Length: 146
Image (tube, rainbow, N blue to C red; front, side, top):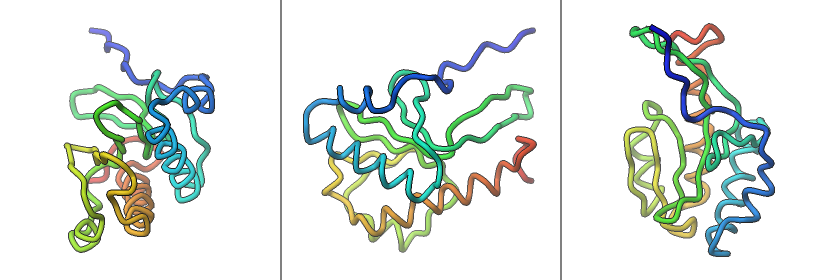
């Protein structure tokens, strides 16, 4: 049976065009700040994944079920309800997260109402921690390390 294509794939859409359309203005400013921070700490260029996710770098995953695909190492989406940061779980230090400030988490997401709610220096430590974790967990072959 053929695998259903993943909904979120890297595209050739222009990140700047996407960011310029983000509203309200305060969310756009937060999105640009996160974009700059993720580019700086990841060392990767910003690329669009699907129509609403800005991602940096990529990794290839392969599950035991046989399903596989590519996803960004880190990324974000300036959604209406919250600025959503895609920073995969498994790397956060409790003390570092305690310093972060006001946020919510999901399985692999960090939700911020606004960037000013969090400690920027703590966020600048969380993101490279995620990048390093993902590069270690998903080496070039795509199979997670046991």
